[in-house]
Image (cartoon, rainbow, N blue to C red; front, side, top):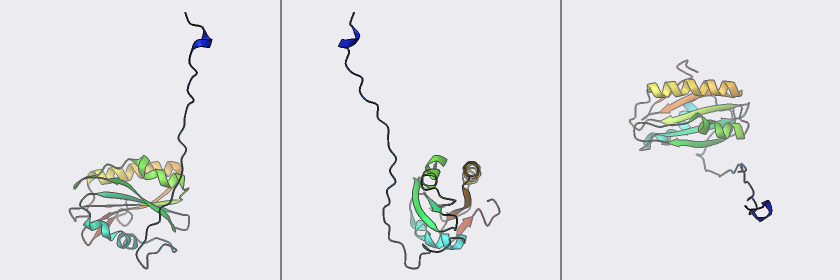
Length: 157
């Protein structure tokens, strides 16, 4: 039988510390970084380059209370015909940055911006989560080839 003095010491426990780092990204000339982002057409134009992506990509745009862009973050990259975006991934930046508003953007490589049933379900669930957190879900925009779909314009949000 060993006594307590001969046992090795317990190693210290570690916790992760959240550090928010910003990476500068050059934006197009005339991008509305210092003005309110309120029009779905404006958002679609800003992220128009997503129409050429070979895979679905989801981006969360964090906005302050005056609808000015705080940041944007790619939250998921999927396949040619689907994407799995966890609500936790979408909400990570808005919560950490204390964003008041969020716009979600993703693309459909097929070129057809019509939302799938999964897009509609995800949007409803995400809206419910954001309401519970006091974050305003302004819009979910799907980028297609030369066109877009806005859940806000369609009356869903």
